[in-house]
Image 1: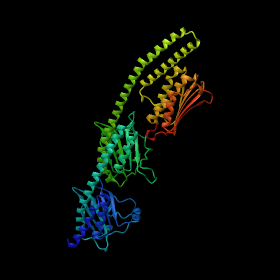
Image 2: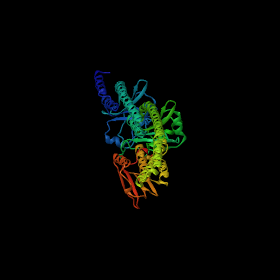
Image 3: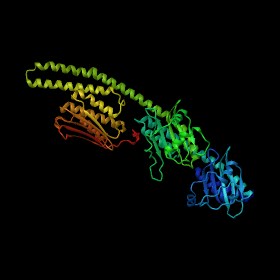
Image 4: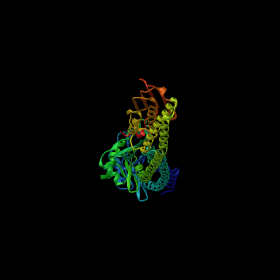
Length: 556
């Protein structure tokens, strides 16, 4: 190699280490190869996971407009496939005359002379350099080939450094994602927000196009619990995947993938895999191109799988998918353990809550109720001894008030014994109404309107139950009604009405219970009103402008 050629080679190689962005390094290598041997056009094709196709294509010499007119990048057909089948330097006088030539697509520039050189990274071929059309119109020479082979060797070092740097950055991102997810799962009252966080983390850390988190529901069916996708031409936000949430995954292949506990990366056109059916179904579910790579990664905790991560990329991002899957597997292991730990933590908290409620209920029954009952009997036995009729009347009223208080305490004890999540909101409200039938002398009518009430957040469900309980307690204490109606409406707003046909608003005092309900409404940006009913009686209306959580809407 002559001295000027060596100097040119060194000048071409030095810029490779200008920065460690892999895409930038590949673009610089392609440009340097063209400049080194005077090629008009150049390309660097990255070999895909199967070794038979190109998964990425970086070009030099074409304008952005020309690249757009050419459409999808080549995958290794025709002359480009020569180096895939036999990774050795190739020089051609006229590539269009070669038997393997597949022709050019429309709008492709004219190309004749050709030089191809593989880039070897340790024991495998990372990609191939393709150079065409020498500027002076001549063919590529042996010296040109030697220069590009030397450049490819230096390029391999730069690529390896860039990949190692990118890998370290990626691992840091995944590590932060695992820590944030574990903290979110352990701190949250429910797991929906954490599952959405998981989907976003996988989307961003994997540089993917769409992600879905799939978990078994209470009936054992596999259900999409969280999903997100990157913005597309329609301008959807990066977190928009609500149309997938609640989808049930049908077919034995999904349960087989869950039981198999093995990650799967499916690249169309690759080696046929009998296990690929879940990935093919995932591609349809995520709305991806037929040529898009898709990964199905189990969320595992010990010997069991608790769910699946479905991830899809763009068709040209096979290499990105191949690099991302090992990190996804490690993340899924930690996410599965964190999810299991969080559920165990909630179960323990639930058990502790039930034990505490049991203790409170027992103390109220054994102490408070018995003392009130004894006081009532004492007053009742004292009433006949009173000489003045006003004193007798007040004693009888006090006895009645004590009886009412005992009834309400027993109803509260009943509520304490009932597990807070043992039934859905409609069943809970119906049970509360039924518990007041004795003190009211009739069973209140209960109705539900709008969206499924259990789509409310747990705190808001507790507020609704408290409103119904306090409203019916006021009817029982003060209204002297013959009928009462409870209506719960859940839509863009949450409305709870308790209507009776009793004495009207004058029969209700501004007691602490109503004050507390007003405070609950105000805290959520809503209102509490107590007004005369349309046909007499009283109407209690509790209104909160809180929409149904899209995260909890699962196709009910």
